[in-house]
Length: 120
Image (cartoon, rainbow, N blue to C red; front, side, top):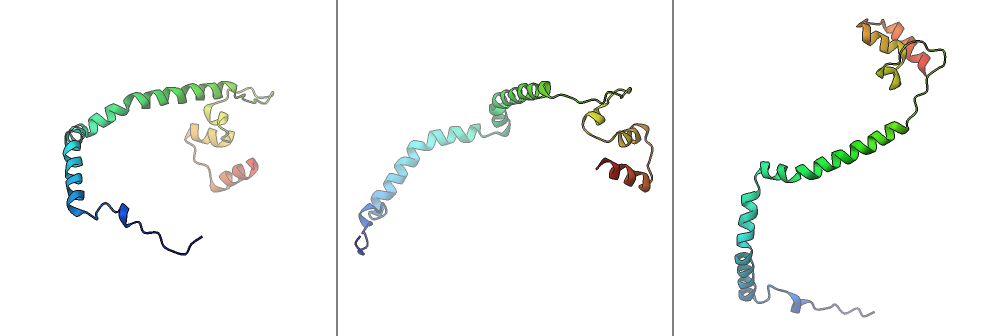
């Protein structure tokens, strides 16, 4: 390894400033129509419409995968349960709390504490 620094000045595009500026102008002129077309399409409604199909396809895939996962999930029901299981119980909400919610009954802080402590 040599301690000499490498001279990269030959690669500097701004070394010949007149040539560099003419190159930039040529590129800008060539890209002008394409950039103008993109600016014209940059309306929010057009952008949302452009994403409509991919979003719909992703939602369909997520729905199918979710249904597959839900169909494989087993719900364990105690054998001595005679009441119907509601959504709250299926999600794991304690039965007493679900009953309070359904009946609009307001539990006392002591009842709430006892119910929450007994579930742990």
